[in-house]
Length: 300
Image 1 (cartoon, rainbow, N blue to C red):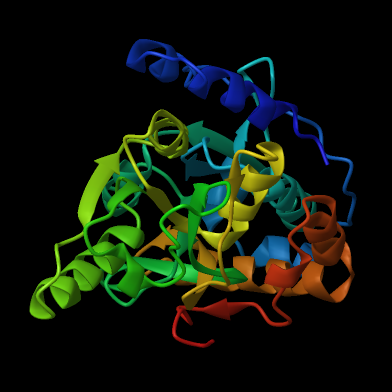
Image 2: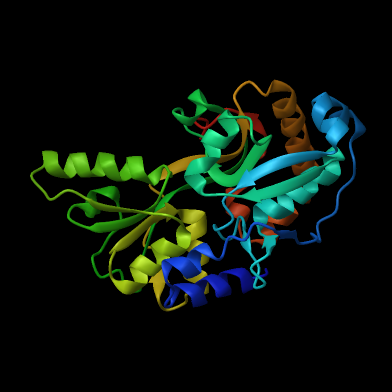
């Protein structure tokens, strides 16, 4: 596994200003060549919408700050990660280029709704509320979880342990709703509400936890485990996920042709073993699914 990208993030969060963090999202990006290889499926290529076949590429929106799924390598320009490798495999299978475009996570769905991009890959959870605006081709399972300081000083293991706790949460994520529901329950039981601190990006969450401005980071378990591994002795993941979830490739609502082609391509990569190789490379084999589905966030 290439961990240089998060080592860079770790160095930044050790003492960065907001300006430094914003500088990590350059307008021009390079795409690292993947070491995962598969073969073209002409039938799946022919299922793509005509405009994509003619252009020879799919424009992909992504928030490139979420290791191990998508993040910048140490050059701050080259995109690497599980989703990037998966996109490269999809590119080979479909016979078109998948071109990543970096943006803030909370801007992805509005950008898709405005048809600025063909799809998004950004470890996005398939939820009922999001399906009102976009469609999902589901390809991975994870769950809501916590990242805490080593030793778990506040003994946080479940949502019920968040009363009166400062929780750092990435802007636009499902964890915001989780914190709101937990806070309502706290207040109903006569306890202090959750002090939710909504921050713009994973690096800001890590920085808040390091600096003591937050007691816990609410983040999916797959990413939390990766961060804890890169910060050995500083952070830990205190428990299993509190809610099973699916990640999906995200599409503008009603993109049926593209959704069907992508579902077929994901399933082909599952069947030929490429998918398993990619997940194993990034230490995420426990998130494997055996079937590619559409709008199936409730299916766990």
